[in-house]
Each structure stands twice: as C-alpha cells, then as structure tokens.
Length: 89
Image (cartoon, one colour):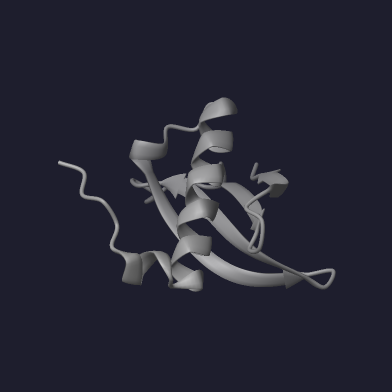
C-alpha cells in the first residue's frame, strides 16, 4: 500500500532529488532493456564537468563469476534530467 509522503519529507531537498533521480534512471534503464527489479542498484554522488549528478548503477544481483554488463545512468541532481548513459561490456 502506497502512503503519501509527509510535508517534512517533501521539504528534504536531498531526499526529493534522490527520489527524482532514481525514478528518471529507472525509466531510462527500462527503455534500454534493463530488468530493474533483478538489478543490484547502487547510487553515488558525482561532480562531472562542474555538474552535480547522481550516478545510478544497475548490475546483476547474481554477480559472482560474471563480468561486465553494468549500466550507469547519470542524472542531474537539480532538475532530474538524464545526462548520460554508460553500458559496461
């Protein structure tokens, strides 16, 4: 059951920025064929060319004996736009 977010949560700029970034990255990941629910997802904050981005990494949950195949999606921290998509080999 989905619960509405409290006003206190919505006033937390960092939480809202991160939620926006994950939603945008998940949408793009699905568009390029990533099974988001079967991915191990990690998120880091990066500064690239003076732009603050969330780097959302999608990798296999069962990563033992598996190399490559990760997808990295960089999302602008301020407006939630996807800046870059990188695919591992």
